[in-house]
Every structure is written in structure tokens, then in C-alpha cells.
Image 1 (spheres, rainbow, N blue to C red):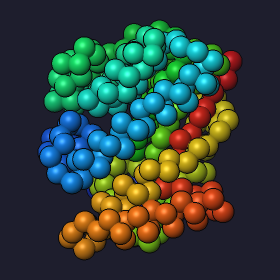
Image 2 (image 1 turned 135 degrees about the horizontal axis):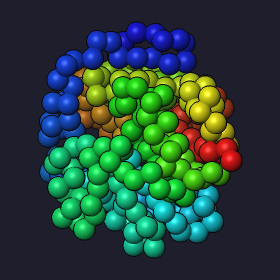
Image 3 (image 1 turned 60 degrees about the vertical axis):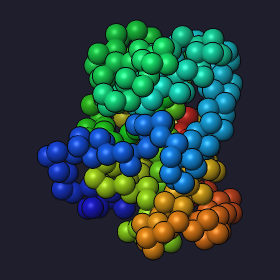
Image 4 (image 1 turned 135 degrees about the vertical axis):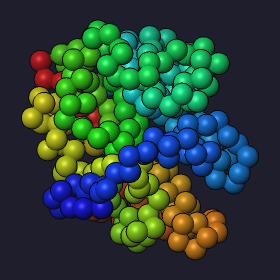
Length: 257
């Protein structure tokens, strides 16, 4: 990785076949696997987070509306949002993940450019922006599809968190080379402000500290260690209360009218 600046890191070099890294069975967000220890942990966290995500967007939008989820994976968030009366669309480049979405009755587009430039009330990117090579161009495409005053929700890891500083090169949320960018809190506001988005709130993702620590322990030692993962995840969250630097953040932005 190389420093773009102290608040933003970039993965260099990016392999020409980076798309192949998404085809791995170890890339859990593109599968519904529930076989391994880590699969089960991930699926448990995902189930808990679905209602939290939908409650958040409903509160921000003051009701249901048009929702676009970019990087929709296997479609579980869209399925849940649809059950809560949202009119949903999705974007997912991964063919296998799209097929799993279709089996659940959710049709998604392969690319954002395939989505009609209609005015969505809410657009969400749950751990997606770090995968985008040209984030400025991507933000412009998002802006075209969000109504004035609409809500944009971006969730990304934070490389200045306590768990990142502890695990260093073993920190699982670096996820090189799939993650092309590595954000801090300051960098998010900096890259969105020129596109006339206003950051109105930043929220922690508490579960991420534990899951990322669990994976990081495996990367560092070669085996899972629940006790250490819970300890470092708890320590990271407690540290975040004072530093405001959590393992991952949810950034709530509004498109200026």
C-alpha cells in the first residue's frame, strides 16, 4: 500500500486479475455459506444487522421509499427491506451473488451504469466504496440517481481504529487486493464535499470490531481465537468511545438541494 495522504491509503499495485479474488469461496459476502466457523459468525452478524440497517434508513427517510443498494451481495438486505415495504433495486457485479439474489426474488443490475437515472430516496453502500477504483467518477454516478435532499449511506472500515493499529499488516479489513482504498473519517468528508454531499452524522459499527479481530487473529496466528478476538474487539470499541475511531463507521450524507 502507498500513502495518498495521511488520511487515505491506496493499494498499489492492483493486479490485473483483481476480479478473480472475488470468486474465492473464502469471500463470504458473495456466498450464503454456513459451513465453517467464520461463515457461521458472519451469517449471525449479518442477520442481526439487517433490521438495524433498515431501521436506520427508515428513520432517516421518515418512512419507506425508493431504495438502491450498491454492492448488494446475495440480496439479503434487499429482501429484508422489501418485506418492510421499500421499493428496492440493487447493483452487484459478482455473477454468483446475483444468481443467489435472483433465487430470493430480487433482480439486481450488474453495474451502477445499468440503473436508470431515477430519483432514489436512499442509496446505500455497505462496505463497497473501498472496492471502487475511481471513487470520484462513481460518486458522480450515484449523485445522478439520488433525489435532492436524498440520503446516502456509506459504510467503510477505518484504518485508524484501535484494532487496525493493533493488528497492523494482519488487520483483516485491509483485505488487499480487493480493497483498493483504505479510509479514515477525515477522508470521507473530503472526497464527498466537492460533489455537494453534506456529512450529517457518523455512527460506529460495533460488531465489526469483533468479526474483524476474529479474522485478524487467524491471519496473524493461523488459528481462530475467540478469547483474544473478543478482548481486542471490546478494547477497540471502548477506545472508540474516547477517540471516536471505531473499526468501521457508517457515514450518513445528504445530497444538497
